[in-house]
Length: 55
Image 1 (tube, rainbow, N blue to C red):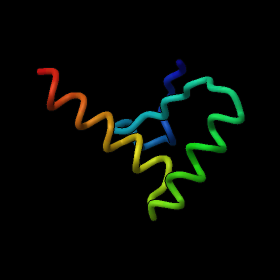
Image 2 (image 1 turned 180 degrees about the horizontal axis):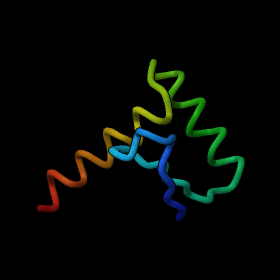
Image 3 (image 1 turned 180 degrees about the vertical axis):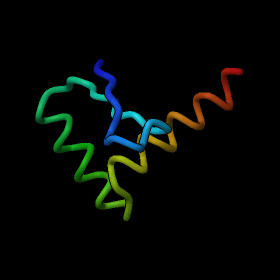
Image 4 (image 1 turned 120 degrees about the vertical axis):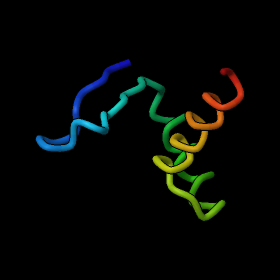
């Protein structure tokens, strides 16, 4: 997993990278689109939910 700041002046956010097979990435993106969502917002929601449930 990689972490890096997004752009200068935006130190309050970071970019998180995860390595998965391209087939998984494509299937995830297709499912998100099917549900009217984007992969980024779906992953953000999961991260926030995980943090709330695992205090």
